[in-house]
Image 1 (tube, rainbow, N blue to C red):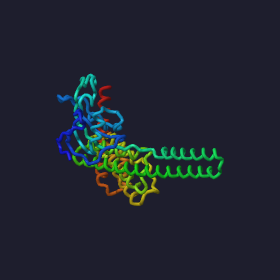
Image 2 (image 1 turned 45 degrees about the vertical axis):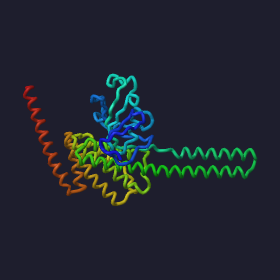
Image 3 (image 1 turned 180 degrees about the horizontal axis):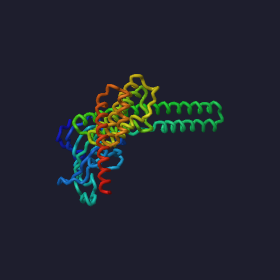
Image 4 (image 1 turned 135 degrees about the horizontal axis):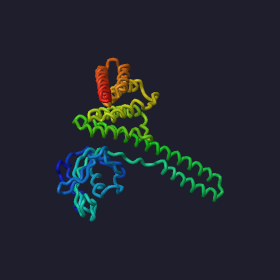
Length: 352
């Protein structure tokens, strides 16, 4: 097992090397998966030419499809989830003879510090392949039946077609269930990474991880695997609330408001969830109202903030933080009104 600062040659010609900075969690991204990374690219003299950390969100691409330089497709495939490493890419594994003017000179060897946060595996379309096989089987037997004029063969063709279609549909559903379970496990891992980052005071990284986790579950085509619907609901609720918490820490008031609104306005299929899950949702609503009220107060939306805090107190009269924030909001609103009146009075004095 490679240790920190260990340098590994990833190719036999020495054109791609990796220095491990922080070990990951023993799971590698498969080819075709959509990976999420942060990176900083530098020349050998240390000059930075690009960094995803200077922009919001992760850098994402499909692994092994030639969407990035050759050194990245090979290098990131060698990384494990959570790993941080430095990839040294010779020009033929980077931008080649011409480079990438004006930031990357010709035949430049580049270094990339890369952190692999996670990935989403491609969803194989088993239904289409299974149905294609069924069609082939049915067609072959049907041709034999019609050419021979035998009723028995025609019946066999129909039975074979129906059987093959049923098998393909069943295989597709099993594959979809496995895929949905893998996605949910990935969401749980992203949330755990976000919680680790939050505990370390890395609020921006935590916010991105929570946002990515929520985005996966919110995709219209995603359906939780049978028996794990409540788990998916808890994860989504937690990610929204935690994202709002990070945004408040960072002073991103509008982001915090949007996250809480997403939770409060989400339509849950209540009949699919237990009474305990409904209670958890009610508790989450109190937190969402409180955090949205906080964000709206900071945005000077005092009436909307107080409405949220009133609702939180109606749901939980013992919510002392909401009560204290309501008082603070009322004080700020009163001060804001006084400032407005003073400004208006001053304007009138100047005019007359």
